Length: 233
Image 1 (cartoon, rainbow, N blue to C red):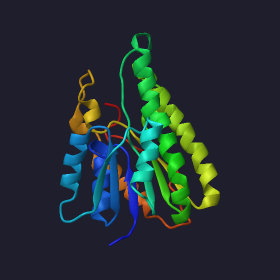
Image 2 (cartoon, helix red, strand yellow):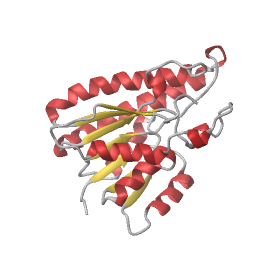
Image 3 (cartoon, helix red, strand yellow):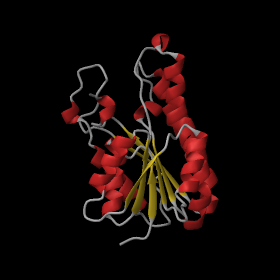
Image 4 (tube, one colour):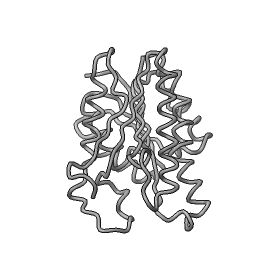
């Protein structure tokens, strides 16, 4: 068993939940965050099966006060892995995108990563930890009706590139995991004829993270794209 600790934002469903499951199965103490308390508690209850150490903490990563409270209240003395996964998506033409939706996407998908990472760095320096930012193919290529989402993910991709270079001297690894279409609740409210059976699975992202995490100290997967094997859906 490991004595290592991981923090996973947006850990109550989808990709975040699968990553929490993978790490907790392998002995990590896992702290998951989310905004919906009921959903978060149910996820933690399931993840704790078999005596796994999973701690749920309600936290809106876009709120600086809540992020500060999270790091103080949890009394984190050790942090080995940070997974910035919390995110929201809005799909509408730019002309029809409200300022509220625009700000929400950037606040959670980009500013939230900045706020959490900034507080986590001092802890990660002590362990030579690993930061994983869950980006998106929409952060590398433009798609119709994804103006706010793509802007946030393009920003996250750039932030991750800078973060990686700044963290190298501290022995902290930084990996961008770039999923294509993954069958998660994100698609529940998205219009379109999506064949979700052909999408990648959240467990595929978790397996990719585990592979990157277990490379030698001399190696780093800087960026990994995980897309549906069939190509564009």
